[in-house]
Length: 358
Image 1 (cartoon, rainbow, N blue to C red):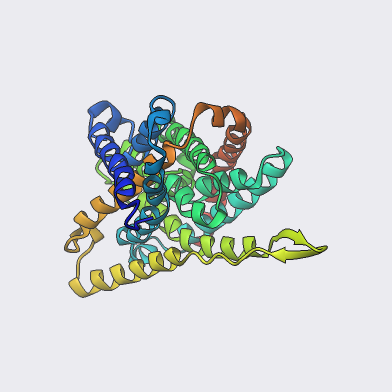
Image 2 (cartoon, one colour):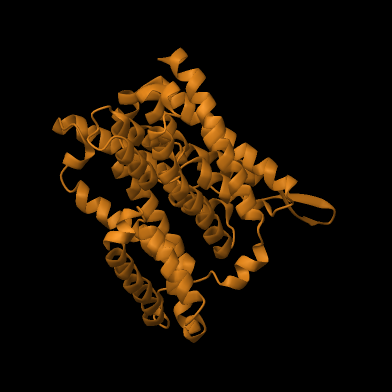
């Protein structure tokens, strides 16, 4: 990819995605876009898709390796650096109820998504990616699963689109339900755990939490975010298990014998865990209350967001409307059914389990 002959062309592809990513950061700061809690990642994939359906055919094919580099190497490095946002201390801060409900939501959503995918006669990759995004942390989870599942770029983009749509709906729906008194049975802690364990993106949880409890006087906004971060931590073990399970699936047959797929070990997932442990040690050693107070944390988080935006933008450039038409409505039907489970099932789990576990 970076050999002497095509190094320049590869760098041109990376530069193209970098410029789009800078534009995504700028657009994400526009007040209207910011009010929707659209992160640069989401803006990036939209820009990439707009490019894919307009000027993509004019892109020199020699630049494609640079774009692929953004969807692979830069993506994995971004997932590893994502660990700087988390610490093990956050788990202890919320306690057992959030951990157990998060676990049930993550495992239940993935298995339900796989089963519903079969019922809907969907391809396994799209159903698994959609279920993973709904189960854990939206776009970041889909991006993390992509190197393990090894699906086509447009399938990743479709999965991201579904979780963004339904996550955005929830960000506005939950505060409405809260103000209407429909979540009163959960209590303040229950509302926070319910929000953090069922909304898709970290940005969605932050948006909904702040809308319900702007000053965090009730502890809803803070507890919801921590509950969500515990859910994000589950990305690493899920990817490891996913890699092991997929490796056991039989591959092509040769001479009547079935061959097992090569085991895909997501090493970046172990890097993600390692960074979380390092961050915890730094927080303890420095005696700070929040990861935001750890030196250079803000700069690293900004760099990480930029790298993930590059990956999302690169994926968007490979996603034309024709590929959406080819996928049909099934991915959105699947995401909708999973959404019903998250909203309804998550409410019942929180209502009956939190009082018992507190």
